[in-house]
Amino acid sequence: MSSNTITFIGAGNMATSLIGGLVADGYEPKSIIASDPDEGKLTDLSARFGIRQAADNRSAIEQADVVVLAVKPQILEQLCAEIRETVQQRQPLLVSIAAGIREADIQRWLGGDVTLVRTMPNTPAMLQSGATVLHAGDKVSTAQRDLAESILRAVGLTRWVDDEALLDTATALSGSGPAYFFLVMEAMEAAAIGNGLPADTARLLTIQTALGAARMAIESSDSPATLRQKVTSPGGTTERAVSILEQGNIRNLFEQAISGACERSRELSNMLGKQ
Ligand SMILES: NC(=O)C1=CN([C@@H]2O[C@H](COP(=O)(O)OP(=O)(O)OC[C@H]3O[C@@H](n4cnc5c(N)ncnc54)[C@H](O)[C@@H]3O)[C@@H](O)[C@H]2O)C=CC1
Ligand SMILES: O=C(O)[C@@H]1CCC=N1
Image (cartoon, rainbow, N blue to C red; front, side, top):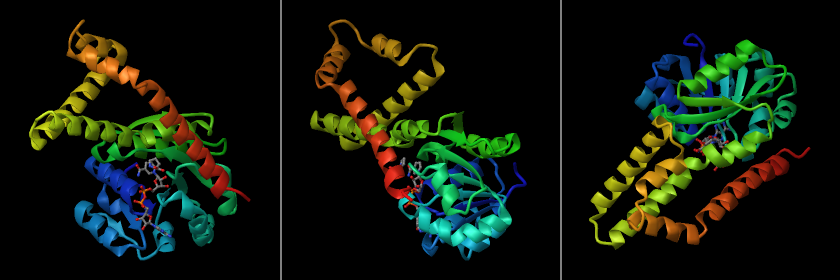
């Protein structure tokens, strides 16, 4: 993988996380190129990670073996019109990270017959703790699948899905998921401050507890439900707290939230991908 030049079109939050994770994993910074109309972001990325900046999207693609499409879904069609000719000439492996934009639409916008892997990463990729779901159509060779996977595996866990529609669910679960945990942290921290803890202590205890719980969940053979039961002494404090959360219907709220995010991903597909 190390000899491949990877170009990022769009140097925003998610591209920064992926680049940071790749460089931390030992990927040669000079084999990574970023292109973005915001020159400040490019300068910042070069200074932080030693990667190369491109003058424009086309020249960035002309040097690339792999092109990561890392712009907002709303501007992907316009971007594809701009890069279509260069992509058709160069024929790099394309990796889209855009939420909700179907392969068929990207193919149409780029003039067809391009090699594309759709993925849904998440921002913990920055710390090589990402979770990425990938989908490839029939025309993508095993070697190209392996290449796409090797890039995302450098920044965390990878899983393939055969059904492209399941990317909507992955987007709602792991793509957006870090935000749900941050929201829970915000709420726990505020409640602890409300109950008298100094703000810095409340924040540290919240974050360390989240980290410890996540590590236990990943390293233990017990399920999250069993791990929760092991914290919950009969008649104790956890039982009271968990019962209040259950009465507030926390499970139903998560069901609604994740279904809502899935629905939004499908809406983006239908709204932005319409012919
Ligand atoms: N932020 C996240 O947690 C995740 C985001 N994604 C997907 O990643 C993509 C990017 O999202 P973010 O990084 O959050 O957005 P962002 O807004 O931080 O980054 C997008 C970047 O694209 C640049 N850009 C705009 N027009 C451009 C053009 N014509 N050519 C090149 N670059 C251009 C912008 O200047 C900006 O730096 C989206 O499609 C999103 O669905 C996927 C997984 C997680
Ligand atoms: O909120 C979004 O639309 C993007 C996709 C997953 C995470 N951020």
